[in-house]
Length: 261
Image (cartoon, rainbow, N blue to C red; front, side, top):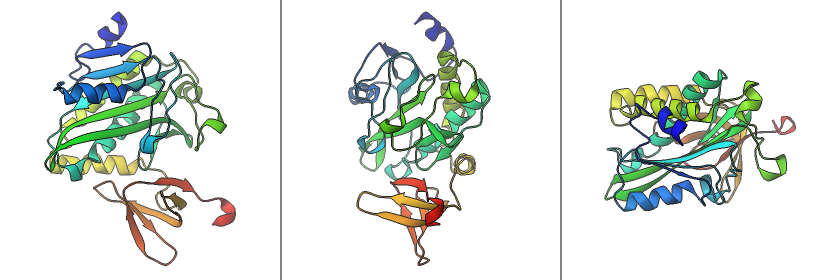
């Protein structure tokens, strides 16, 4: 704990800090505190999560001592329609921090996965509460596999861990500090429209699968087509064989098998 606090010196985010050896979900705890007036920057971390989750309620596995699992309370001056900007911010910040600390080149998979060499090692989840049309708070949950990855049968997309891809040990405390500093450095871009266009461009440039034949798996159907582009509100623009372009805000994107292209 002392080393972690030392690493967070000079960070605006990460104060106050709560660290749990084991917890159900860091985001559930952060939301409870946010509902009770917790200030922006509050950070919940866990060595082990027993009920961590990703988008759509999918389980996110966090065994003890081999990952970064944390949730950050933010209170951005944004509308509900701008909420996807938080996932863009998190994606770019995680990529920049990993490049700095581990010297590898992550990419992003729409809408909220972080990949190395085509395998997922990190996930992002932004959960918000509204006050009218404005965001009252956002809990930004980030999970990274640092020294362990789940087995293929445990996940629906190939997984890896940061140390396996970097080929060396990665200091989790230093990585956390780097992520928080990158979040802070870009946080002002969320509410400044000119600056946001730069953030959006950086996020879009890191996305894999754009322009590629893909399968888009929705709750009620699976579509074949091309992941043509993304919009500034975070929507995927997915072109069907008919030429119709669907705007989709939530789904799972997978490359189409070669035999289906």
